[in-house]
Length: 151
Image (cartoon, rainbow, N blue to C red; front, side):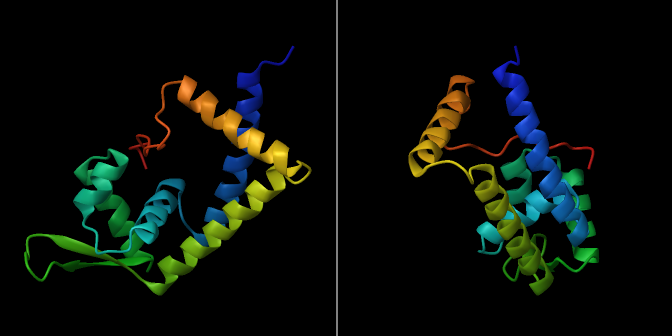
């Protein structure tokens, strides 16, 4: 008998593979892709401290991630006009394009995942997944999980 946890793991691996392939085409790592998604969904000028708090990452980890994203042309760091000790983050057109590409990939992947479900089954699937996550102790608002700090 195959356990549900194993099935969830297989589904997770399938979705991770699709996302990894899309990120590789954009020349992004998984951690960089998550940071770009966060920045794109939170458009007001962010600072590195916001990224540290959102992902529970250390300052050196975020500094490295942002420096590599800046070098690749996805974003730029600029001094805060009111506090020159603080840097602000601005997403560049390449960064917005990467976010749009990833969003499209995720929507396409999720559609494929439930492609032969009826609308009722799709709703039940979502409800059951949400309940299973809550049963494991994760609040319904799905906070950012601690990221792999080795990236």
